[in-house]
Amino acid sequence: MSLLAPFAEDPADSRTYLLNNATAHRYRSAVTESVTRISAKIAGTARPFTGISVDGLTPTVAGVDLDTPLHDPAAALDELEEVYLRDAVYFHHPRYLAHLNCPVVIPALVGEAVLSAVNSSLDTWDQSAGGTLIERRLIDWTADRIGLGEQADGIFTSGGSQSNLQAMLLARDEACRREPTGDDSPAGARLTDVLPRLRILTSECGHFSIRKAATLLGMGAEAVIAVPVDADKRMRAADLADELARCRREGLIPMAVVATAGTTDFGSIDPLPEIAELCDRYGAWLHVDAAYGCGLLVSRRRELLNGIERADSVTVDYHKSFFQPVSSSAILVRDRATLRHVTYHADYLNPRRMAERRIPNQVDKSIQTTRRFDALKLWLTLRIMGARSVGELFDEVIDRAADAWKLLHDDPRFDVVVEPRLSTLVFRYLPGTDPDPELADRVNLHAREALFASGDAIVAGTKVDGRHYLKFTLLNPETTLDDIATVLDLIAEHAGSFLAEQPRPALSAR
Ligand SMILES: *Cc1c(COP(=O)(O)O)cnc(C)c1O
Image 1: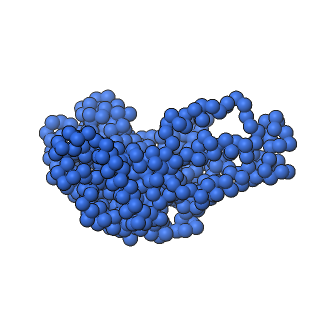
Image 2: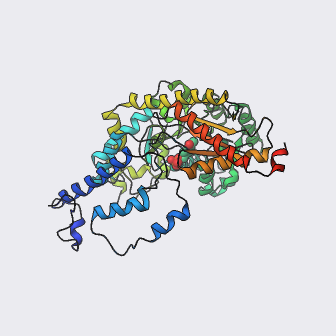
Image 3: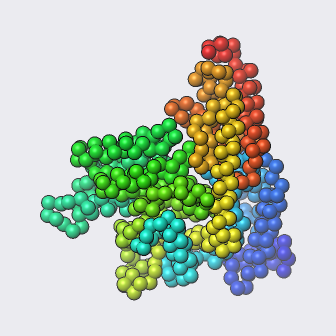
């Protein structure tokens, strides 16, 4: 059997392509070919991106005839080089500084290879067996690190947005159950009766998936109250107290407070103990969105998460600060009984009698049905490199962010917003000492776009008080302070050439 052309014998025979006992050697050669190419690609990546435009790439992808197969993995991979690999965005590159995407650890990629070939589906025991037990061990391990207690449970999800959605669903149905009814119904109030009065409180810097969740859950985005933040972008507990009191006065039901442990823009961590106190007082569900900050669970800065153990539910994104490939996320809950709000029984899949016989069907806890065995990646990560090594990687990028903050702080070309707790830096280029705000916006927007188009580095952008800023999200321990200094120089260069091209009035306006 040719190693390079595993399907050459009979490319027209459909069954050649199925993975089974007779074709395992073909699987091996096809996948080995792809892994060989990707490893060469990763080793030879000089820039995070080529800078190609949408218009530049669209015709290449559109030009592929999907109805004329190549029958040859090598040929398809050659084509893929053109349509994808050459111009892909490479997160492992030290000058990729944009979004919350991490370089991935090799043990997790071993897991990825295994899980897609075996293809377990974690909805039921009879489709996964040991996969279910592995996922449950990791849920218990994570809940234990958080300190959620004996009754904790949870489930792997596709990402933080899904974890947040499920948390809000549980919080909504719990609020409904607790709401008194005229006839003292044990099931609580009818959802349709309380829906208009439900409110979710989260900080102004909370993630937008909370608003999306509110919409999907029938409350509308208006049900989310944005609590002001302090100068460090942390939720003001005093303002939360005021909002909770106002809800009570107005007959509204504060069904959940969402505290963020690592806001997406600033990495700020809301004051968890004070917020937990207020949730106790008002009977509100405390959800901690630690999609970004979860890496602290294994870092030497664990104390930054103090108070998280009082949460009713927690979102963790292993695909952010645990260096796992997309997707790998989980929602954890303090009280496993609350997961019943997503339990539905289907005769063909997870009949009630199975639950009675204590057969573990994970679908009973999930809003998905067919579900990837993403947990295997984390399992092999813990078994091969260990939690402490993961934490060291995260600690290193946090250290780097602290150094980079000093660099930015001392550089008169830039204005930096808050001293980082985690690994993001929000800053902007200053066109002069007292710049015209419009011009400052335009020059920063331009610098970011020009940098992206050059492919030399990728940075993110966001708004602060309505103004355009740039953002570094550091998740790569290979990014040095030199890399960061180089990128700042590149930004200043692009900004400088933009300013040089401005007509005089724009410059003299200040
Ligand atoms: C990234 C992020 C999310 C969303 O997670 P996804 O995995 O992208 O769906 C939610 N909350 C916070 C704070 C995040 O940073």
